[in-house]
Image (cartoon, rainbow, N blue to C red; front, side):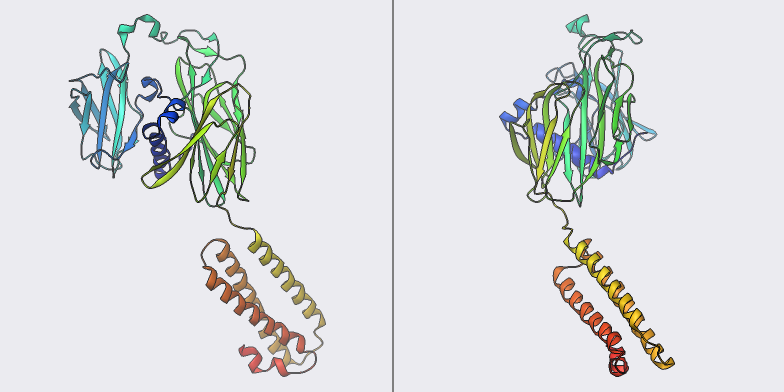
Length: 419
């Protein structure tokens, strides 16, 4: 079953990936090489250089330099179909597309049917995408095998367009594996052993992202690709969340086949940092006011662990929780001890004591809620400190009244109750 994340979360990840490919310096381009155009075909890319609610569809044949002009392109917007022809740059643009509507671009080039992924039309900014037709002039060697061709024994690799994307959050870290598994043969391939790997054992809320191949399956934290790999690219896109209990976290990941390169993108939250023996260079990149760390390194062999060390992560200290629990335990013990010591009382004194005990419970509940608000970030430090002092003073007064009840009525008078 394929799980979905929020649209904003997915768009942020897409923007980060686009920024790393477009705006990175020369050394970073050497590591994040542009993929085969076929691998980019039909994938929507959010941009800011188009009018709001606009979609630009570029149609090429084989290579980015081979634009197809005067090509009819259909844009399916829900039940409606809009049509436009490409210009000399191979682009057909559709403006004022209904925000949020389900959209898909379609073109037929020399009998070859091309279509994009379905995606929601943007409310702000625009979307660019490629439709890539096969360049038949390069001969039969580039033509994939016919449908239904038998699978052969062979190998696949995790292609250079793969990414590990990390987003630190509030006490959790979201990690995305966006894998492009490449079969360079002309026939389907069966690998010597099943393609499977485990995400971190303490990962929670694991799921497959939309856009993953139907061959991909997830069971707990184990990812598996079932059946043969077709020629070209098979996308496996999975995510999970890891608990963050301190400012540092180490993620170790192994894949069953070789990776052409290591590419990691980390959303910089606060002073978050990433390091790894597999990383040879990294650069901060900013897009739409959000900074990302783009790091890369050479390929790794099958089964070799990729170790990512994250530091200076945002997290909440466990000290307030320990203090609150200790305080609660102490108050409970004192309460039990005080209750055991109470001698036989007159009816009027019992009524007064009952009021004090009720007051003690109210103060105790308020103290617990205050500690929870502090932990959840719903109370500022100044208010927390002053209110905590007030509650502790009131509790101290109540317990003093309860303890003094053994020796006389003083603290149990109306003044003590009013406090």
